[in-house]
Image 1 (cartoon, rainbow, N blue to C red):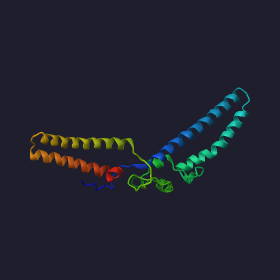
Image 2: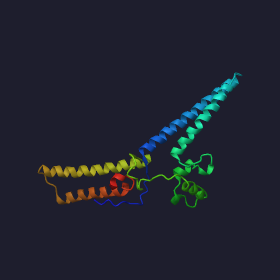
Image 3: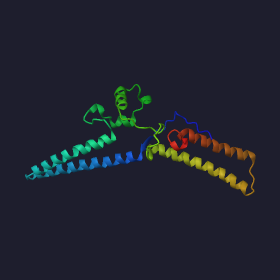
Image 4: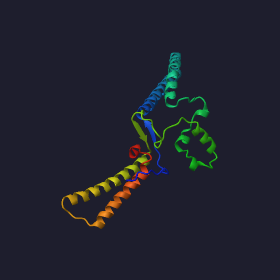
Length: 210
């Protein structure tokens, strides 16, 4: 079977070590909890002020919380974006840029140079067609829902082609007969389907290349 990969595929995927993905999720939860705690303290302070009640103890506690959280926030951010100073606007990649920037499609846009500068300065993320060290732990592939739907549809087509070949095999094993024209047509269809799936997805699914 030909497993030549189509490097011009428009499908995109990112390889993420499982432990790194878990770290990102846990860090996000921690940051959210910190933020919610400060919101609660702010709302409590506002409530006491409106009732003309003592509130300085809430302010003092909030200051204490901020001091405690500073180091933890820095640690979380550094684990996800090493050497990135979030206090420096030039080091922060806008969400829109990270999500939608594509040099081929964005060339000519007035904001192209700025977006490219942001992306060039970003911490490198391995794409699925790049080499991943053997000592990396279990890897996850992140793809969009549209890409996943397209992949599942192609996997179903490939499965149907395999089922069709199995039907031929079982027919012949049971002593049945099939014309040579019908046999060749169904075999060519299965081969074409297989080649199409490998050419389309082989560059973002590592197991297809092993």
